[in-house]
Length: 280
Image 1 (tube, helix red, strand yellow):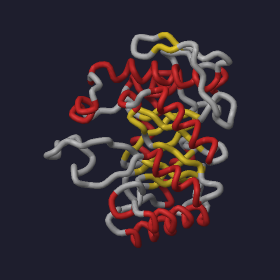
Image 2: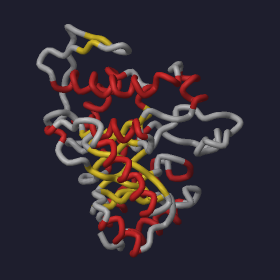
Image 3: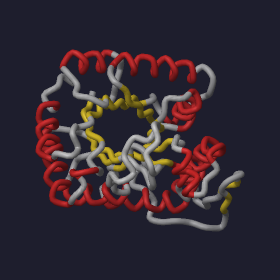
């Protein structure tokens, strides 16, 4: 089980000096992946389902990860997650390929359908269409990355007689990790993702999500070229050794820690040092 860290493109840890110091510290401590979340806008005033205050700063994940790529050598760079239906899939495919090339193939493209209706409405995407758009956009990006003569015809995106280079480093493009806890998200992960990304309070939450993934695997076909579904899970609180062992026993491929409080870079550094010693 590998260790990763998420959340450090927000609040007091997003500055250039803090990013360099913390990213290099994570790499030195043996963390394998560094993840960055996304919110383009947030409801103001804050709504109960919003994860942050509207005045809390958060950097664009791809811009942030490009900066992290330049100051590290080994960390995998994950979007955790990009709200895919809010993005133009061809533009995102170009951005992802660019970051993948500049980082030497270290990108993990985490995507999800999103859940904040005010954010999606502000960006101009019908909330009810977010799932169907997410599925199409994944397929369209893969067509642009991989086909000798890229084309795609869907309800929400169509193109032909165009091409885009450079292509991503690895065959098939960046590994796509699908986030979310709904039955639709589980089916999307099984059918279209190299991996699944979830979060919760502890191993019991992961066990329940794994049941959902097993049910999805009985409902949709998984292409063989995707390989086994990788399980990445983020605990939204400090992790103790017993919990880490339980995560490993559940088959977790990546245990992602979320350092708190993000308002204090020194506390984040201490969190990283403490959790680097977890059994994994």
